Length: 391
Image (tube, rainbow, N blue to C red):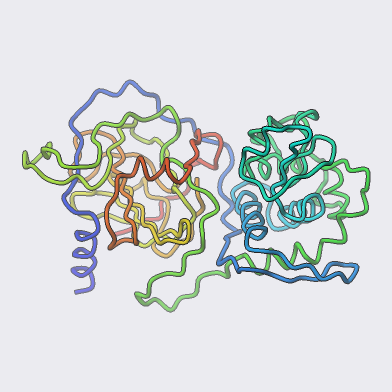
């Protein structure tokens, strides 16, 4: 009975089965990145505010906006191989010191910086953003440095960092793991005031402890999962690897020949192309489901609203997540396949406002409206994990 109920729920969620008219693909499978998702850092619910005490005894109250930036730093650290909790604490210490976890424009040096989303205006030389990085020092363009995700990736650095090999990020500092955290932060920031960072270590540790969700317990049950606000949205396939072949809306079903509603969008891509989670969320289904073949359904909170995304037609060994797992935006969750009612390798992708039982909407304008970023296979941890395995 439980399996029958699940099957009925999935039918309600997904509607008529999609398929792809056979097309010849002249695309190369996306390259696999070298680093894997560590999976040890997961952001939970973000509180409206948090008060913590610095080493000098000063009480610091952070707003939800500041904590959301902290969540970005934690999430980026979690998907960057070699960082771990120690590296995230150092990054939080640096951002607290440099900007008090605010995305600062600098209209005096770069008037155009005020055109990007920001939390205020700074005036330290030509510094910008959370980590007060300077375009003149080679950290990136104004547009790049006004992106919190980019700044976090630049701070962590490493061979996959956007600033490699210079300026050096944390992973480019030899022996940073053995250094005092304040000294490690200074090694990246190269500040004229090197002793400031250590004062914020207790605050950084408090932020990490509060924002990081505890491991999921056993317990089971069918309660709706608690899903924290996402830190960003991304497109589900690497840039340059896909072609839209069947849009959202009414169409003649390519297999049944019936005039019916197509609740998703079909993107043709080479077999094995990585599929990314479009946002932070919780997997509510990972396994086979009739005509959809290999199917992943993820619940998200985006802009305070519950949303579900669905990814269909993966092969059985091309599903890399499991029910109940928390995932990050841009995480490699599976590979494009052609299982179920499909006549060619492609991703059938759906968005439902309100969650799995909500209203299907056209995914492409939804992604554009929510600022979905384009990723290439090497800009995220796109190595193949071990298949999660699902019935």
